[in-house]
Length: 191
Image (cartoon, rainbow, N blue to C red):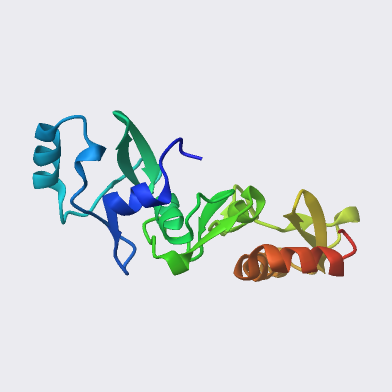
């Protein structure tokens, strides 16, 4: 992942702060094409917070290796610096705050788990999320998708009750991540 950019290289570039920020370190001459750029860039950047927000609200840093600049998500850089390898899948911000890159707030998860850790809006068009009219027009059923499988959560008298079941199931799965998802699937005879 990320070409020749390795954890040791990143550790030469950045110092990780406990609040999740990356701060530029004085980098060795080998990171630059000339002594002039080495002196110029280090003079301007050392001690400064690295990165900018991208259009999606994530912190992005630009790292140059072999004269090729590469934009990287700060969350992935922090993961690599701490774990010694790039994440295998996607980095999820557990508390859903995209700028909170503290290592304890990051986890390497599948796209399915990451997409389940989104803030659900209360309503979708003219209905509550997770609430569907029951068959024969009676009651409201609720279901949730997990690993591409629809899991039936029950039939409820009101749309609000069905929505509450959906929100509860979503929060439970979000809190436990992949380990819980596997147990949830087995318990419901899906896995």
